[in-house]
Image 1 (tube, rainbow, N blue to C red):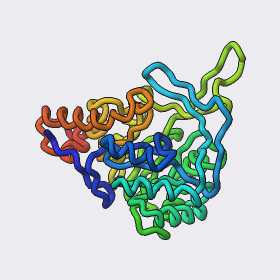
Image 2 (cartoon, rainbow, N blue to C red):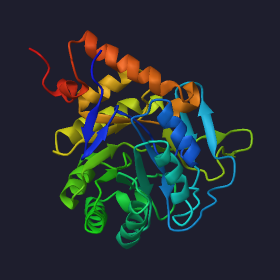
Image 3 (cartoon, one colour):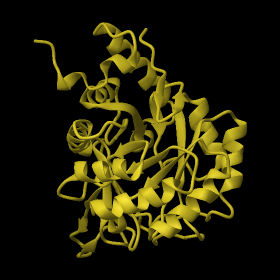
Length: 306
């Protein structure tokens, strides 16, 4: 069986599949549960400076097998409370990556210092949530803003910094290049796509907030395209995100240039046991193609055999 352990931005991962931020990250026990189920690492909910209740219901619309639309509004207990949950996950042995969101570079830097002190092994910057006013895409859609935010954080922390970028922009690769200039150790691509569902009977949007973010298998081709373009423009590792549900999905991302992979919406459909299955399927697919290690297949589609 092919070896799946990878080095990512100075972190040793026992496997490439990471629990994506916002899924199963509400508590330390759920983070620990994903770790015990076979995740190579777990990414926390995106944490802000103060507690947020998020948007009113309905916040989620599930589409049969091909995706999910959500507008949660970044609910979280705030940076003063959440480190207690991180400690629970760490005691279970999990490799924990802390995710933070903020409205400007000063707040990003301050929150990153706070979450660094909780014992996480890396920090992911949420520069890409498509539906939270004043956060996410609104502060992360211009290369100059991304570079400034990443640089402010890198100058204040001692951990690897991962920039999670948005696909809701004309040139996601330009955002990745800007993050690399700012000192990012890795890029996560992508977050959800801005989307809408309408209830024609009630004549209003299905979600209370209106606009939401689309995730799941429907966005995989877009995620792949972004990873492909970013891999050709940056030297730092890329984490592929979006629609991964099978070992073949994962291998597509790896061959497009991803060194690690985040799994989120698939847990809603298939349960937390998906991590063990994905590890087995990806290892078998690599082995069948003659790869002894996952790292040997990274970017393979950019230079296919003649």
